Length: 352
Image 1: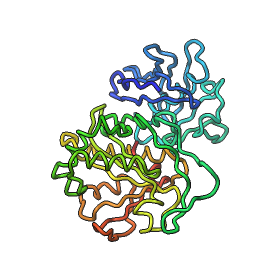
Image 2 (image 1 turned 60 degrees about the horizontal axis):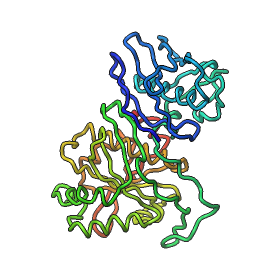
Image 3 (image 1 turned 45 degrees about the vertical axis):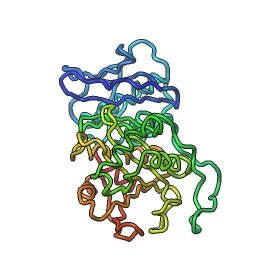
Image 4 (image 1 turned 90 degrees about the horizontal axis):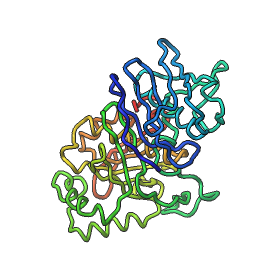
């Protein structure tokens, strides 16, 4: 997987993402940019391989002209980054029509978000952002066997896939003008930072993990040994900013407090670096984390949260991130708000 610096356009200021894995192959070093003449250029490394002009009016239409003879993977990748450029530039854009000439030589089933509307290939915003090819750093989670296995207190659940390694997600967030990424925790690399964050009084109030370094090492090792949960480090523009735990709800402590489904996901999160606090960046990591969890597993329909009911700042983001409050309930150690984000509402309402 190649990761390159997102490209800046000419006068529009649009910056685009950098993970391109067309046809589930190795990543290709593709990017896109708008020029001052309102042309869209797709670049392979530093060379333009395709271009088009954004035609005024509706519906939006993508008609790429390819330079040379790009291979099928490069053609698919070019369509992906071009579509991202269209949607990133216009927050109100709902769908894009793709010319048949642009799709020549491409198996259209490889672009799962394509559908036919009045005989024209069309891409909806909500479908496009559910593709894993641009932003997910590893293959999607799937079904490892038929049926469920015995779980805690009768909460049978699917077998879970192995935890990912390295970079798991990266996407430029045009709302916050920042690249959001998450990577799997490397204990030897991250322990000092994790210890510093957890012993910050602001963090310790909510996490209650102000412990010595070796106890925190044991905490992370235990997490990584569990099949249903794994920790991540989140970054803004490549700078480590916070710590996040993802989990499958069914076999976690939250599972018995509502009618949890076999593919429901949940998370805990914190921003450890104070310079990365604030409403804009908080919105960016909330969008990015939910987007990652939905991309990671296509069977996941709900992402759940259980923040303390007095975490007023976090709860103020609920509506903007398509979270709804289901109820309040009591854990043994805190009173929590049960929050739910539904897949369809997230991709229909949240600006990515």
